[in-house]
Image (tube, rainbow, N blue to C red; front, side):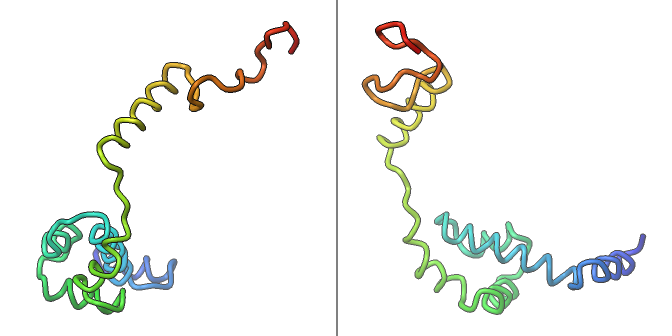
Amino acid sequence: MSATSVCRFFKKYTHQNLWNYLNGFRIVRAAQMIVETDDPIAEIGMRCGFYNISNFNRAFRERIGSPPGDYRRKFGSTVISPDAKQVEEIGRKLDDLRNGGSLSEGGGNPPSGTSSENGER
């Protein structure tokens, strides 16, 4: 199937242009990366398929409504990253769960279906 046929087929069944769809998908992914990482914007643009920074900036501004740098300044600080202690604690809790433990600290209620102290269910 030729590239033209693929584009025609895509538009017939989705009612949108293939290239606009792909660029939109790339821009949304770039916006996510801009907020979640500290990677340079040019590098993010390249990873998302834009090999010309000017084209990336223009497409981003058209789709999102602001340039990538402004977008990062506005939304980049809203991501809350756990510190090393929190990551270790989460890791310990996940290990406990994998080994049959529970999330409650210091005991808590017995799992359902087990006997209580007086032998009743």
